[in-house]
Image: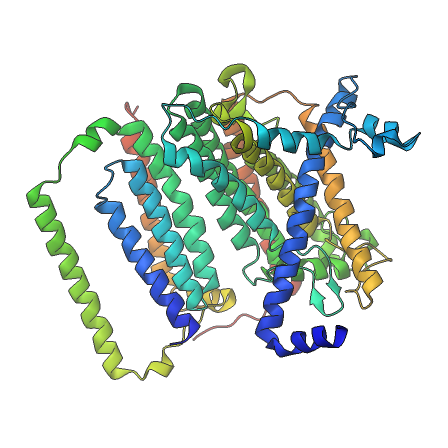
Length: 169
Length: 389
């Protein structure tokens, strides 16, 4: 096992562990704690990107996602009643449905990964991580999905404004 | 003895040598930055005293040096030993933790504020090279993106400090601060895009060597190689510099944008409940962030280690390498003094003025700036149009 492998297992374990702590923290039901663990999950995931030589993705991961969780923080602090949230119990139906959904997604992703592993020899799975290569791909092959995504974000922004304005004139 | 050392050095291999040199560089840069933080505080107090027609710190004296005839009293009057006394005081004071705070967050918040400022310094090239070593701790290709990523994590320290304190004023201060920092991060990020469009690389070392050749972005006429492009871009580079600098003031919570801790309304803002070394960490974090910001401005706009005519090539001798480092430090210190000077010259902005300036002025201006520079570059270079796959 090389050093990169060891780092991978450490980071992967920490990512999953922090991810679990976001939704099912046995010690605290405080939403702010959940948000902090979400930040840690994102940071460890950025570490995984670095192991894949995708430095650009790692930086953007932290810049965009970890930077955006701060907004979540503000939501938690300003809109949620913290005491109420801490007292709320986990509902059986919710937990059951959640488990089923996670299982289904895990099954789908696992299957697609396994099917890839059979068809492709592992040496061909090198990742192009440099900023130049990524930019070229984004503005040639993937320009349509890229633009559609930005439109989606615009819709989300308009939605937020609509929801937060009490009286629309 | 020396042959044993070189033998050990050779036995390390390239990875080991890289690790060793990185460790040495980190240790030296950390020492220099910490000293600069300590003396920036002194400079702040001396300059504020000068502006307000006072004396500033002029009492601390060391036992032996203080009794040297002329020099001792002179150094004492300059306040050279004041940072020492301040440091000892913050370590020896009682570290009081109020009953009502959320302990875990209360403890971790000062560290979270302090660390990103130091991490941001890691990628700033503070010289060209010394012997065969590049004078930068981490020569990253993503350069500036790393800085912005790390700086965006710095907000958590302030927000957690306000949240953990569990009392009104720190809480208000931290809410203000997070809104302010998120807003100005956007303007700051947009303002540097034109520079990277012109250079075509994100690596900060490349930015400096480009400027060494084509002239500083804020003042190209002394350039070694005169091009039309650098003059066409000049006004927009100045606009970039202006937006970046004002945003840096907002990001580091300095006056005229120090609303997170505005003493008249919020006692002391997010650090109200802190004492002794934890408070000192917030304080040092602020100055480390200012130093990082100044270093970044020098790198991006003021040509880093380069100086027209005298030093526009990467150093080949050790003397020149040291001169480059000194040039970089001089520029940084000059900007630092500017930061301090501004603090004592301008009144504080109102919160709505601050937000208007950020969102309604700077972000549109920065966006237009990116667009115009991109158009100029396209017209100058006129790249061949490629059609098809």
